[in-house]
Length: 135
Image 1 (cartoon, rainbow, N blue to C red):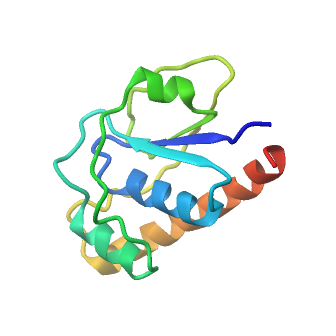
Image 2 (tube, rainbow, N blue to C red):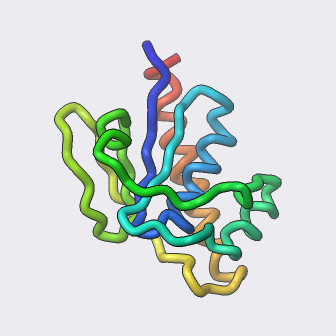
Image 3 (cartoon, rainbow, N blue to C red):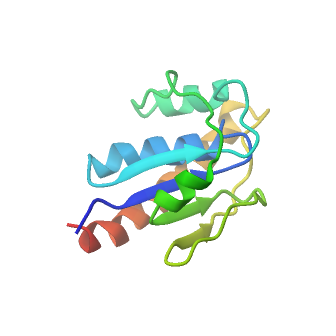
C-alpha cells in the first residue's frame, strides 16, 4: 500500500497544526506524508510554539503558515481540523477528525506545553492506527 498522507488544518496554521505536523513527521520517520495548512494563514509560526517544540529537539523555526487548498485536502487520506471550526472541503473516502484543542496564540510557554503534549499523545495514537495499515 502507498504511504498515507495526513493534513492538519487550523485557521492560522501557526500553532496547533504546525505542532501536530512536526510531531507526526518526527514520530513517523518517513512512514507518513505530513502537511499542514490554514484558511487564513498567519505571517509566521507562533514563537511560543517554536520554543516548546525546540524543547523536544524539533525545529519548526524554518516552517511557515500555508494556505489551505482543495488539492491538499483531496490528496490527504486523513484530514484533522484543530477545533477551530475551519471550513474544509469534504471528499468521499477521506477520514475526517476534529481535535478540540486550545489555541496557543498569545499564551505563555507554561500554557503552550500542555497543548503540545496533548497533540503529541493524539499524534502517537494516530500513528499507531495508521502504521499497520500502510506498512
